[in-house]
Image (tube, rainbow, N blue to C red; front, side, top):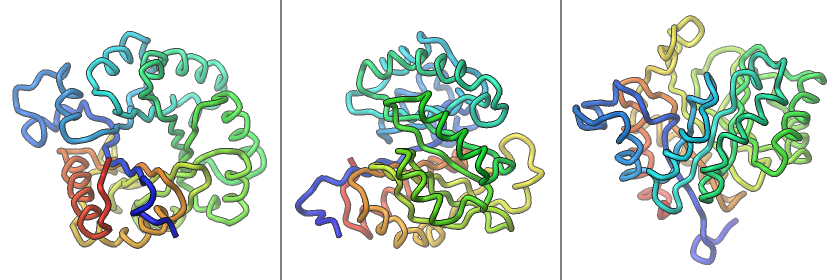
Length: 271
């Protein structure tokens, strides 16, 4: 077990995205311009997932502005484009374009890796494992974290495969529905990763847009994760936790709530 008094454990909590208009009046002041949202966000959090890159890869100027608006020590995890995770036809080209776009963030030491969220249809078979290896090779030196949806990926052999491949595994909280992955405490890289999607069973399969993530955790539901989080912290020196239940500012409220719970219950100073 790690001695928390002897070593520095880094645990950072944030949200999946930050520039949501429905966060006005919920988290952001009602008249805050979109251009000032990231600066405001940094008052409360020290890391963020950039998920707009899934739909379109911005140019370098966009990432340069993000880097300028964040303080030293702030960390970005960038979600890979849908070409990599869903379309899977010109992956090499998409990865190269994304890596080039994020250079301004990397140059300031604020790029901490890339997130690849694969769909439920992406199942554990040999061809898909080879695709993961190819994708990791495209990213080269950059940390790559993968999230699966289908429970065929839930086996010990996969954990060893990811460890040997230098690929980080994303532990998830999501509805307890057949076919989805359960709660886990896997660490396959030197950095651990957890994402909270909400437990909206009704809209998970058929919800349009962000409807499937429309869910706010109770304090009791967040505390259910304390043992799992503690287990993860024993295995690594750095952990990220992100909340993706973004509609109506729910992710912000739950992220801040989780920060307080962990600080009080696990006696960890969040850095």
